[in-house]
Length: 60
Length: 391
Image 1 (cartoon, rainbow over the protein chains, first blue to last red):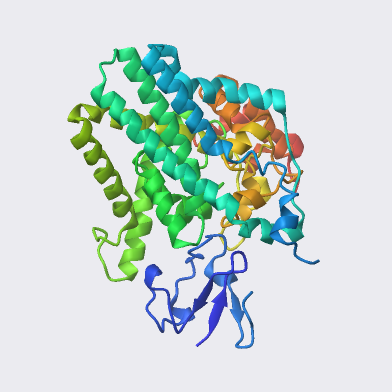
Image 2 (tube, rainbow over the protein chains, first blue to last red):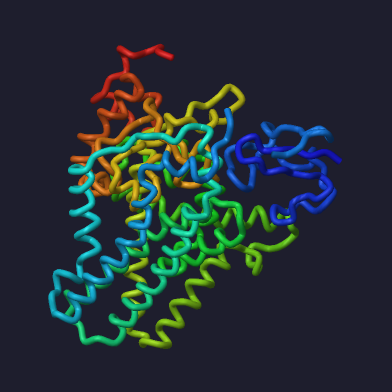
């Protein structure tokens, strides 16, 4: 399970948690999220530009 | 670079003690309206339009600009200072109280049609300017602020803005697909019906797609557009139950006037600006070059720094007190309050703004967002030949 972070506002998509509000149930793989989906908080960053977090990354 | 404390960061905000004017002006208009009502001075019932279209543009001109930016190391502290967000919460409370007061007056007083119209216009300015506060709140992540945004939009019946603005306008800004970005050669009076109708359609489509991913139909109680409209329905019905059904024309007209005020600001914000299309068919990321800015102090205080619009589009979740001015971003000749006056008079607007768009694109308006059907006329007037091939 990987996590992906919006480089603009810091929103994190966690595959384990999904994002219920956006219609992605827990366990939804990043690959299954459409490419034209944008950060639900700032809408500046689209899926292809999200940064993958490795397990050691600590969010600020 | 070491981050500053909240106390240290305060000193960098020159407007710190002016921000309460955001709701202070509502109290002032409330006082003027009451005087007009009880002393029988009809002119005072027009205090909101007189202030918005007269006093504020004049004060912008007299008082001038403040382009000071907080340094990078002060931004985090400024953003976390609760003082600023409390001002926006208080604003919403005052908006609702004044709105209810105006509904009470219109519903229960014997008014001449002129008095009725003055109060309705004043209400429309109140609820229209409140869309700006809802805008500031609706971009924030905390649940409370998103709720307050929807509540602030209830009187003006513009709740779909909460969805469309964040997820529609911000993604498509300065592209021909955005109903809230005005095109060069498009008058405000053409823009108004286009943006009003297509923004509702866009909000609905955004929610429909989101709900489809959840396996729900668009007519679900989860639909945030419906939730926001339901708030309006509850509020309007409660007021009509309290003060009579003759309120309905007042409610409808003030909502239309309020929404038109917001759309006039939308018209100004991105007029003629266009993002470049990249080779993969997508538009380049939003840059400071894609919004019109202004640093006149008075309008900036009343609109919570909305006119630092380039930084807002670069960082939509950033709080108003931390927004910065860019020297190289497109700049308007005066504040939004004065610019919307110009927008109402298309020939004057085109005369002032079209040359600015031309200059911004270094003479090549083929790079601008042009009104379909007017390209030839515009190109004949502002030939791009000399500038051809420029980056």
